[in-house]
Length: 401
Image (tube, rainbow, N blue to C red; front, side):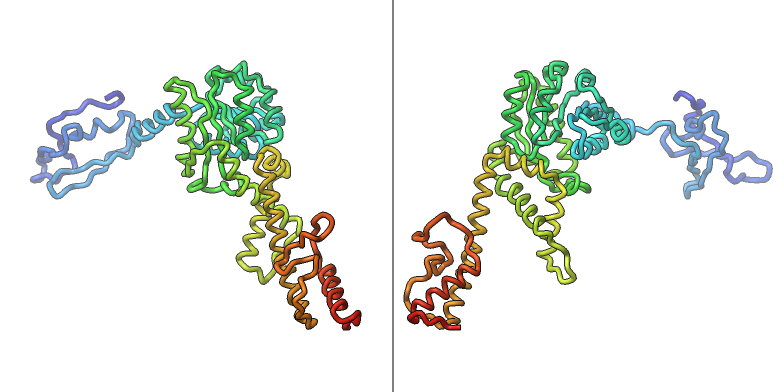
């Protein structure tokens, strides 16, 4: 072994053994340790001047411990080799909040990350271990294996148009992480060269909800277009494994199905959160758990930009229908509530006639079809007026006060 002294493989003399009699040489004994451990000198660097420490065993043999650190670490080296084999060169276009959020985790897993953006994020990128390029041409000439488009929904098309894709390798994998999926899917298919691979994804979390562990958080994806080469399929799988290693729940789903379901979940969540935010709700000393959950919803949704909310509406064709359904549902609940109030008011003034209810509202709170004009929200003054008019008519014009 390089850097270590030669040794005698058969017998070692323990200088610390107790002599048999005064003036005699120490006793020699066979060591039952493996042959390569029978002499301490093979493990002691020649330059080491620290003495070996030994401890007598019950068998009479002494075990030596080294003070000097071993000059090799097989586990660390094996881990480094494995990381080198699975590491990818990943480029991020759009180094805003979400781009930085992804870059930090990618670097932690040993991937080489480069980035470009309209703004100058050089200092911040350096602190995260990311190589930043202000010029998109310089970024493309680094030939990343994977390009993640992390721009906003509204700017995605303009960002893609400004990216010099002709300078990238023809087999580059393009990945989007937008909250809508049909739009980027069709955009990539129409604008990217046919040789490039496309992976549409939606991490169902962000810098706030994913600030800690990603374990159990949903990650939706669709392999839109992947070349026939074996390495290209492995590259897609390796990228998805990044999220698997972080503990995400992987959900394979078409972009079309994603948008249909997201309109009923994500868009409605943002809508309700913003409506409650517009009410300027405040915490009180007697808050229930349900109200605290509403405050959390307001906090989570209003931290996102309005451009994101508008993008969820503008680029998901299912959002308009869901917004109308929400309006209808609110009207139905309101009419049911006011209809109950109408019935109570009729009973309190002693009106028990079998005459049909006022044309403003039916008994179940729904607007009568005979009512003229467009549908409008009915308020309490209108109900009171209708009740009073009905009562006056029933009592020959003598209103009760």
